[in-house]
Image (cartoon, rainbow, N blue to C red):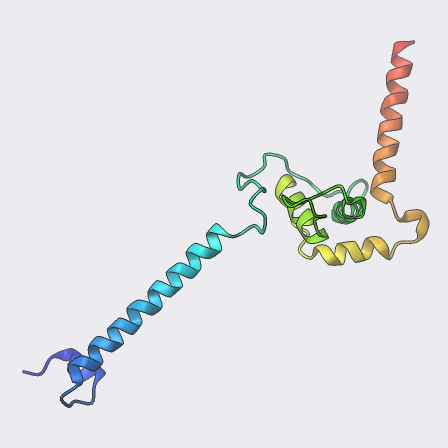
Length: 151
């Protein structure tokens, strides 16, 4: 009786079992490579290991009347320009990593942070800092309300 593997995977001959063994070995190695790729991707999701993998409990909900996604792009761009956000080697962190840190910290996604940054810089000069101006107005209003309450 001829083995099923022989009929399915070989054309016959004296090296038939050797060919079957080699094909099985190749399939096994390919599956191991795929498994290693998955493990590598899971352990190296963030480019900097100083970003916590724990999910933040703070959620940013964009509001067109207040802070939108481009507002977060404005923050990331100004953080980058400040050169005060550094990696573990003391070098300034690129915009991409600052944007990812904001996404992780506030549970939102830019989808394309560079487009957001581009929209910020394409604003007219008096609207360049819309988000910062909005937050400044909130602080001024709160300060004024507290001062009135003390009288």
